Image 1: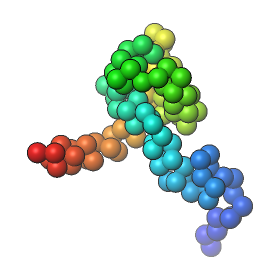
Image 2: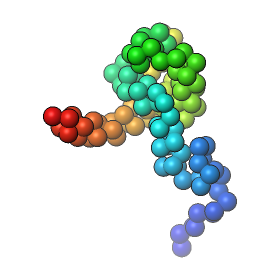
Image 3: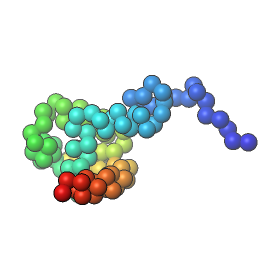
Image 4: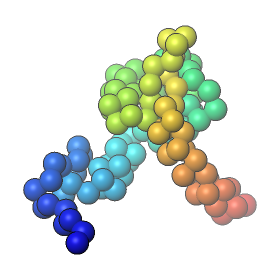
Amino acid sequence: MAKQASSRSSGVRGSRTGRPIMALLDLLGRRWSLRILWELRDAPLTSRALRTACDEASPTVLQARLSELREAGFVGLGEAGGYGLTPLGRDLCETFMPLHKFAERWRK
């Protein structure tokens, strides 16, 4: 018999319900989160290069989002001192590619 999930199971950060999808949407809905992931999709960037790529986002907000994305396991520190996507972060970005392709068709 399948084990039922306990309603008292450990919560997911950003969600009072403990539902991972709600926590993920909360994180990705924060200002600059998606943009940071998008800008890191091809290659790691230094803090300065990432800030430039993000249209001069506030350094304070950018660092806060980077900390949250690192804690969530999507972004890591690169060997050269910049930030890059983790395997989990690359998987997330790949998940968004069909939406990106749809948006490109929609825009035309």
